[in-house]
Amino acid sequence: MKTRIIAISLLLGVLMTMPSRAQNVGSIQRLNPALAKIVPANAVIEKVAGGFKFTEGPIWLKPGYLLFADIPNNRIMKWVPGPDGSLPGTVSVYMHPSGYLGKKPYTGPESGSNGMTLDKEGRLTVAGHARRCVYRVEKDGSITVLAERYHGKRLNSPNDLVYASDGSLYFTDPPYGLPTQKETDPLKELPFAGVYRIPHAFDQKPGTPPNDAKLELLVKDLLRPNGIAFSPDQKFLYVDNSEPQKLYMRYEVMPDGTLAHGKVFYDVTSSPDAGNPDGMKVDVEGNVYATGPGGVWIFSPHGKHLGTIKPPEIPANCNWGGADGKTLYMTARTGLYRIHLLIPGVRPD
Image (tube, rainbow, N blue to C red; front, side, top):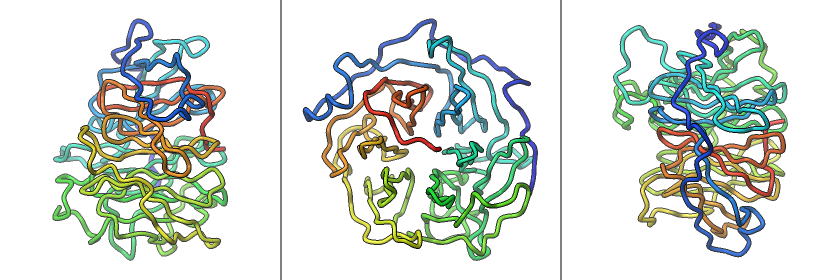
């Protein structure tokens, strides 16, 4: 399957609602002295852009701009900062449609794509969500589908994804991109929500169809697997479960790329704050940054909750940006936010 990007920023350049200057918003909950080595004492949360419906999947590209999904509007947006990373910068439409491709109006709440990452050549790789596949954007703008079916049945709605150093791609597949988002959705073909691996996805030739026979199901006992991230040494894979139990899981990565010995890294089911576990990332020291109830929860590599970054809206995902990789960008409902930290994050090569 090979299609063209319908709209890129150079063609549409749609300006969104932007703050006229940096806004210091939100708060930081400091629970452990170790947080001081991560979040500076004078750190502020800035609103970068607003006016969207539900933002997700931020990813920083080396030319110096950020992409993120505006899921209900079925598009990927592009934010270009001002000089030296200053606000407000400009926002434009990078890709539309990014998810659902049907001719009839989409009947569900989340028609677009979701999480995004880059392979080692810098090619954008996208969890297609309502498109029900994982796809890669080639350098010429064409689309290569990397995974679409498991044992002949369509995937639910790929949600988030991460590459291993060998070029294999790991992704989660809950039903949030289906029209009803329920287990009983009539379009749902698989009886579970899985965590998958595409061995050597990087090596798939542009424009070739996916070899779904090689798609590996690694985990199927999580009801709503969502965010996914490797530890810096890739010995562990973190996967969160959004509901009904609100869990951050950690799995050992075996030499053959499979997962074993899954354990609960942290349980936030009892948190009184609104929001569920969603996207997550790690820094070079192994600290975990996980969106969840009330904000972005920061954990030590050993599962100690150090504190929480709380933008004014509940965040769904986060990722590293800026030249030094120390700026954490957060997609939170209608807005895009950022905070400058002290430790760089693990970013795609």
